[in-house]
Length: 491
Image (cartoon, rainbow, N blue to C red):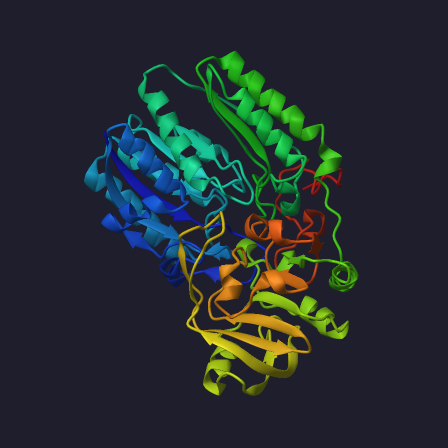
């Protein structure tokens, strides 16, 4: 078969302030930049869903018509013009090439300025353009907010099973395998269950319970007539009625797939109280880190989760920096702080210079001080952690600034701290620090967990509100609990 390949990936935080523009997709964030045609075929060595799909489908004898692949760092909703431009490009390519099937590399939690359900809108337009007989399959992020339109207009949707997302390429392979099952001609039945409460993203890590056991059971149930199962805990920062966790599956036997989905549903809801998270304030986290570090041989890691740019934060709040300096933390490092102006000032001053500036000028809680420029680089680095191994990331002009025992990675691109390479490019070895503060929620664990004495989760100010119970919801589904065992949302 001739399979058209396309990707349009964005995780949208409707409570964040910075919208996704076309230039953000051109840059690509923590993924490859905007790519077209044969450029997409060069992704095969990367841990991306489209890479896994290509390898599996190619092994099955299929050929590809690559169109466009676009990814931007999470933020507020996608600008209308940008959404229309990229969506139309994908739909036009489908009309032009008339493929035998379409594979889409999607996120599943995209909101645009004018559309609540970005993926559902894209799939609907594609279906209208190509008709009902051409199969459309897509891979989705574990944080997808699954919608009815997505399920209606795609023949098969398959989600990641790990957080940190180390199985992105494997998910693409599983999507290709589901397509092969469809091509066998035997009809597949769909079963869907919606979980009635929102889950904090910090509780979704598959390295720990209860998520670990749920996904282990999911894999066990995906046998025989049950062709595919997925569970997306959702992205609990999108204010629209279909935000929330969903379990779904495809199978040849309607009773078998219904039983599997029902069992997974019970696995999730029976552990409702265990999906809650205990957070520390910035001051509490730093005080605890200092205490642990006194007798530790390895660094204590703090997740600055609410300023995570991988979930819509701007990566420039200074709550934990103030706590580190205020409590006289020793040998602490923090990254990535997004401040192009500060990075530029450091490059202009040079290594060894002392510069007075205000970090976080856009965040409203900036930190003023005199910093020493410890290291400068162009910010180009190759990742070695399990999640992005082999990927080249461009942080732009990057500097290591130090003040009162704290070294800060200041970069010109907004990227989540999920790989040690982002410290090393600024001349820092995080393994030798006493305290490591990562502007990330969970992804950092893939490369930092094994080097950490302990990991603490801090609720310092930021746009990614970590506890969904703290979010000012207005449009959730009536009856949805805003957190595990939390209050029920009422219209």
